[in-house]
Image (cartoon, rainbow, N blue to C red; front, side):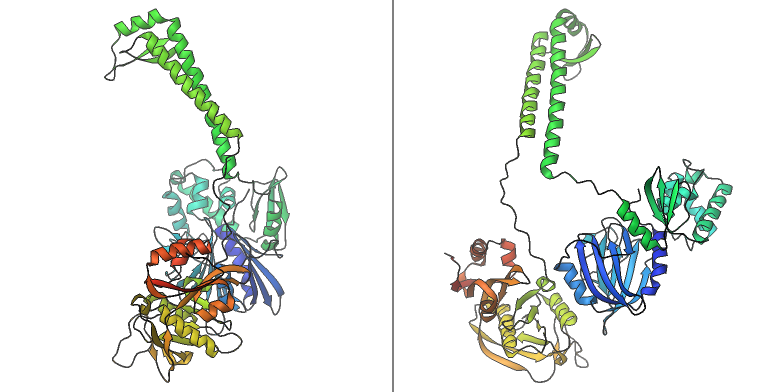
Length: 591
């Protein structure tokens, strides 16, 4: 049964989807781990649902079942393309990659959907990956945020190739004809079987020129003739779905469109076999090991009995024949080969065989016992991780008045935070210390409040070098979005992470260097947040207030990890470098 769409299938789909251009994205959902659901609205066609199964399928169909997930990739994708207009639908480089280009304001986000291997979804801007559903590294490319997107090496395009190129492609293949057509000519299995009908089993490189020419004519006829989307059956079972008129099948069920055919074919597929869990795999291995041990033990006991039954013949063989350099001698008794230690007597060799059989029998009994008894669980059940939000890649907090505040961790992330997230009506804050993080305060229904801007100033100061230096207080300021620029004065240079600020600055002087760490609830999920004391107290359920002191960072992180029941890594990435002193606690007991 067909497991995924081929490159020609995707090309036909994309040709039919040109009518989607101009549709607006109303919603993006992820009802399953590999399934993306795009709810579109088009002036002429009304509501449409584009479904993408990253394991190799895509079609227009009905809304899928399953509760949509949030957090991480899907949240970032919604933020970029929700309410955006679809401007371009294409297949990338004759590969199984669907390219969707959107327009929203001045932004031009691109979504690349790779429908091969494990599958992947990549949100890009100006050729750079903004967010990846799966971080992957290959020999020729890396799929991760902030990496330039490189497609896989170019594949063979059967629609644009010439007869000469087709013949050369086949002649250079070491595969049999059907795999060569399916893989190296990029046709997929069903088209390859139809084209190779009558020639299957021959090597592609050994085809005569006349056969290659006939295959070329079959290919052109199949690709250029009228198309009829259909599901193809053998012995009453669905085998494949295709827009092309395939041969070699018992039955064909036609559909108005390839989208309808794909949706119906997926409904006819048997449910995927449930993979055994780790405990079931362990039991299966232990049962197999027990059978193997018992069989080997029976063989060893049989060999020991043979030695005792033919002691004289075995002794004669040991006297006459020469052993190898290890002192081992192989003899044959009643059609069975036995390896003996020539430094021992026949009786001692038999005893060794019986002892080895006893050890294996003991192992078999132990394996059978473990294969019946449930494995005791020593670990506590893991608490499901809260969905990762887009701002958690940076330093962040939620202001007491509700604004989302993000800050860089280094020069590179300072650049990203400002270039990517400082938009109209947002504000920018910075401490009056070299190397302090750039802080962006996102606006909600209205511009950020004065309270949020003061908290952002306190945050930039606390996350700066002031903490490591043990400074008690410092100054910080904030400005409007349009006062921030990456363009330096003529003849000057701005290093990475630095920005030009023009106009009046709003100062907050003599701010205390302090930070609170607390547990908050965000969109139904518990999160650990480090931020200004007022922000943490406004949203937190329990928290601890910190300031520069004399307690080693490593020791304090261990105490906080225990108190909040979090990993050390989760605590460590939230706190600035330096030493600490606990100022106060709320619903926490840290000794």
